[in-house]
Each structure stands twice: as C-alpha cells, then as structure tokens.
Length: 296
Image (cartoon, rainbow, N blue to C red):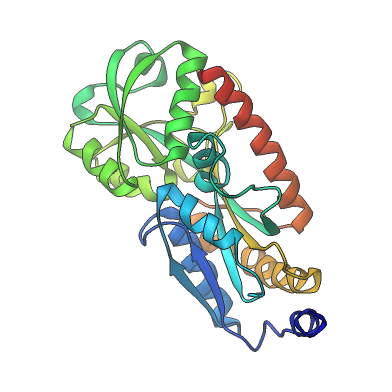
C-alpha cells in the first residue's frame, strides 16, 4: 500500500499520456470541448487524448469511472447530463454520487441553449410557444428534457416529449418537421440556425449572448430563467492533491489563454480552483433536485 501511495505521489503527468474520458459518442458539444482542450494541451507539450464511452445518457461511463483506482492519468469529462440530470431520471440510483465518487479538478466553461422550432411551426417567440397545447418536442438528452420541463412548470405549458438517443437524432427530428420544437446547446445548434433549417426563438442565458445578439433570452419573457450546460474535468476519488493541482494548472492555462477559440464555439470559459468546481456542483445539485420535486 505504501508503495502504491508513493508511486502516485511521484507520478509525472508531464511525461505520461493523459486520457480524457467523454461520456458520449463523438460529435456532440461535450466531445467538441474535450477535443479542443486535448488539442491545445498537446500543442503545449502535454500528451492528451480523448476516449469516447457511452451508455444510459452518460451514467454507465460515470459509474465505471467512479470505480477506477490508481489511474492518475485518466480524467473524466464533466457534463451536465450525467453530473446533474441523468441521476435524477434514474431516481439517484446511478451507481455514483457526484459529491463522493469523484475529485473535482477544474470547471472548464459553460454553454447556453437555444429553444428551437421548425419554420413550419410558425412559432417565433417564447410567449407564442408557451400558449400552444399538445405540441411534440424533441429531447436528445437529459439536460434538454429537464430544461424544457422547467420552462413548462414556470408557464403552465403542456407538451408531449419524444426522447431521442442524442442531439443528432433530435436535430433530424426537428429539421424534418416531425416535432415542432426542442432545445440544444448553442455550439451545436448555431449551424442549423444559420442555415435556416431551424429557428432559434430564444436563448437560455439571463442576458443576450454576444455571438447571437439578435436572439432574445427566455428570461425576457419568463423571469429569472437561466439554464446552461457545464463542462469540467473530474479525477478518480483516490487522485492525490498534488496531481489535481498539476492538472488544474495545465487546464487553467489552456482555457484562460485560448478564450477566443472557445468564444467562437459559444463556450464561456471559466477556469478556477477545484474548490470552485466543487461548490458549483453542490449548487447545481441542490437546484435541480428542488426543480425535480416541482415536476412531480
């Protein structure tokens, strides 16, 4: 046991390959952020690769990671779905606990969501949307589902959910007109909006985002409405503090020195200490548990 502890304390992350486990298939926003981070870190002398795993909206790879030990060069990509929402869908029987199963390393950034509609639906604002009855909406992940249902309870709106296995199929359903509306992160949705295939009727930030200043916020119609997706890095529960600090330093430099790159992808960079991420996790968990109680 002493030998193992000494080995981990002396582990040199600068000399080893680091793997970031992404809890989704390639192509989504979480995967995009992880690959940008890995690319920049590698260009700055750190060997970082991305490994995609998926299952049960991220819960399976999170559960697997929660059981890892003695792997200081393996990190988990923090994403709002498996961090906050998927466990609620599983009635918190997901096999991991966000406050006890992982070590927080760094809060990388966040992205807001567009509320999207198909042009044929002729819904061009939130006020008009929330007056509709029995519309069908697409949910590609737990985040978009909870976000829309949160909007429903604040307005009394009723809608019918059609769940899809990821944002890709949800986009196809929206663009084909099979469903009237949905919600996805701004980085993945902006291209479909610019092409005219989907209308962005609102964004879920408190204030309008500069990359899409003409699009109003949900908050302009529904007071105090704000929802965003979190991107972070987590370590195994037995990761030593000195290694956490080294990773925190590396990825703070990645985020804070490359804000322009993330800005172009509609990612708001944050960075900060492990304690900042730890506190944010507690805040988000408390918030969404309370909201789930309102959904019952």
